[in-house]
Image (cartoon, rainbow, N blue to C red):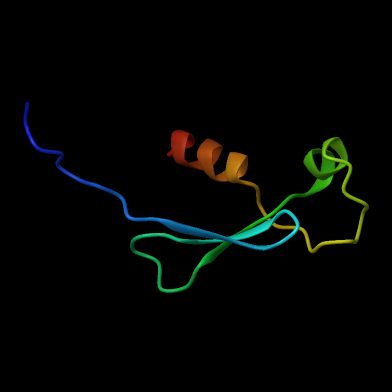
Length: 66
């Protein structure tokens, strides 16, 4: 079996509640993930309790669409 061509080194840290910081290769600053709209509502997050940010699902969809 051959060696992997690439290994992504990602570090994720919970900031508070649903807010997470992700350090991704190629980015100088961490990416902030969170919840918004219907997704926040689904998880029972009270509107305005946390600032709205893109979800990990948003990033997956954006990556697949590229």
